[in-house]
Amino acid sequence: MTIERIATGQAPAAIGPYSQAVRFGRLLFTSGQIALTPAGDFAQGGIEAETRQVFANLQAILEAGGAAPGDVIKATVFLKDMDDFARVNALYAEFFGEHKPARSTVQVAALPRGARVEIELIASCSAE
Image (cartoon, rainbow, N blue to C red; front, side):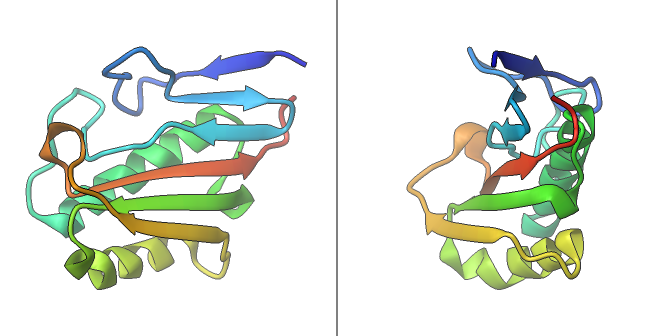
């Protein structure tokens, strides 16, 4: 099996030497997404606006890789401030609905571009 790079214009371009996602067999690994719009602007409006933009980016990347939120196996959430957990968690629940992938949530000292939230996913996809 080979590693396939996944990229879409519906999510922000990678801002470093990495891919938006890679697919290996039926597994799709997204890079962590922060609240950059596809045009590269930072979403304004606080933690809720940031989280909504992160999930919009992840939705686009999942689709480009042949997956959907219901195919996510594992999520990792990085928060600048654990006091934002409840608000991020509510939007997380909205994004996944009844689907409940495994998840880790950790507080970090800092995130790129001053972001307050970053999320990465691992999904199973139909494309191979």
